Structures are given as structure tokens and as C-alpha cells.
Image 1 (spheres, rainbow, N blue to C red):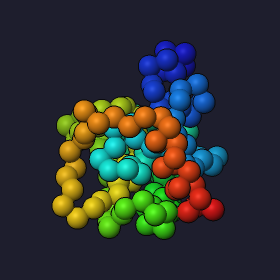
Image 2: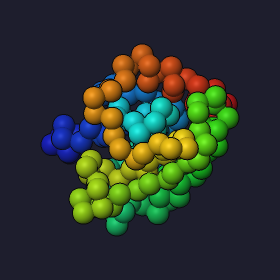
Image 3: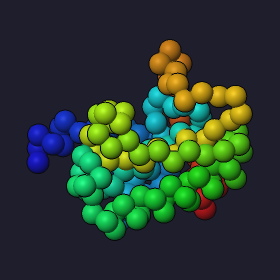
Length: 141
């Protein structure tokens, strides 16, 4: 387990040993902002229990993942963060675009005319991510 913990950034976030801008957590899932967002508010939701692929996920964790995605999608719209639509996206396997092998659901706020391209040259500061996270948390309350 120590090797998994040290190699999986999402396991470290769940454990609280890796910095993250948390927007929601319960007994099954943790949701936090993506450090390379498509748009401000781009949230990742991970099961607390590690599983690289959908086939490894407990079905109840999968249900909790999607329920959290629904709540966060609604919170994005209510938060004041510009959100004209929402994508829920889960990449399962490298061929599907998965880059971190701990299953996770993306909740991506969409804006008319935007693109799904990552902005590698415009990485937000932690303080900016934390401010966005606070808006989403307030809308979830």
C-alpha cells in the first residue's frame, strides 16, 4: 500500500497529504479543483478507495461519484462562476485519455465558444483555486 500511496497523487489528496482545493467530501468521495482546468471551476471527483479503472470501482462508490457530480454541476451554475453548460467526463484507460490511474469524474463548466483544450501556459495559483473552491462550497451549502 505504501507504494500505491506514494505513486498515486489522488490517494495522497484523499489522505490529506497532498495540497488540493477541496470543494466537497463525504465517506465515499472527495471532490477538488483540477490544477489544469479547462475552465474555472473544473472539478475532479475521486472515490476514497483506490481503483485504477471502472472495473475496479465499488458500484456504490460509482453511484456516489455520479451523485456528487450532479450536485457539483448544479452548484457551479449557482456559484457565480461563469457556467453555461456542464460536461461530466470519465476517461477509462490510457486509450480513452486517462492520465491519472485512480478513477475520477471530471465536472467541467462550459462556456459558449470555449474549447476542451488544457491551458498549460496559464496554471492558476493555489490562492485562485481556493477562491473558486469557496464559491462552489457556498453554492453546495
